[in-house]
Length: 387
Image (tube, rainbow, N blue to C red):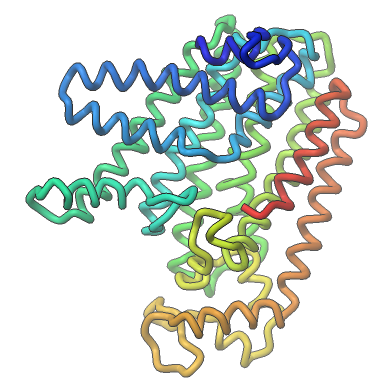
């Protein structure tokens, strides 16, 4: 982990003293750890066959293509909150970085399920592989090849996450505790994703409460709640009230994680694609029953609800009632209707309440003050963002 160690050991090229880890320092350390790990993995596959090397390099590029690195950040502060500012971070860097590989797995598979065209300002994995197929003049359907390859990318990232996690310098007891939290996180992410997919097939049976349940499992669990508890597990045996910290992290994680997803719901409709790196309006096109859309339906007049509801075949009803795919004008009208119902204001109020609840949970928790301050700031910045 040469790059990560350079950053965290006070290498004069960076001018960063050891253990004074700002958010930027942590992100660079995680990305350095990932880059070094992925370099070795890519070389190993390239030695088997050049095509596998190209496959691995595409996967590597997807992992390193940016992102907020929130999951390692929450895990870091969950760990730092109990071990304090003087514990060396190098032993746990592989574990923190493994969360980004898990995240890439989730993103790539999610994009396949949603048939999304862009992610982080570039083409999604299945679109990249479809383009490679076409450019090479291969036989068969490029889209099928792209989907198949993207599924394998996600699978590979999940295996790589396991391998990188195993490189952490932990005792056997600590490693088992960390692994238990990690496995629970993965199961909950898959469960939440299934409910998300199911919701699109029966939106009329959905509710605000069920949309929030999906948010809790699909997003809150593996973005905030479990990474914090993952960090706590990484600390091993510590001289604190672990149960009290775990309870505080759990309450904070669910509240801030749900607020994070509610913010995503708003960005999915109102965000600037140039900033978010994803097209706006996809949730409205598919009728995905997000908390925002469910609140809008709940608050809507009968006429407004008719403009928001999908038709029996699953396609969204245009405003003129003609059926078929939704047009840009119809999409704009649906966006207006959501605002008119007051749903946006209610979602913004839900976000504020959950952020306040999360911050309050930390107030009496037996964690170090620098971690409390960092998590308080993260609760605000991760839920009030342009992307």
